Image (cartoon, rainbow, N blue to C red; front, side):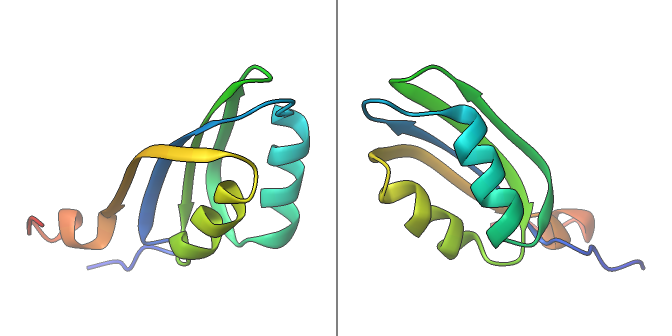
Length: 85
């Protein structure tokens, strides 16, 4: 069975003031390994979706920008093997 390059599907919302989706997108791209990045929203609410092996680092960065919530980190490797949890 093939191993996923990036194991964790990481999704969250950032609520704050003066958020910039382009800056957030660039920072994540430059500082974290991963793929399938989406950073969309406006200056008060940004939705993040990112596949990475280090979701805690992405969460830590996002928490520095504002309040984070609706956090979902799914282990896609377990899903691929038919396991849950």
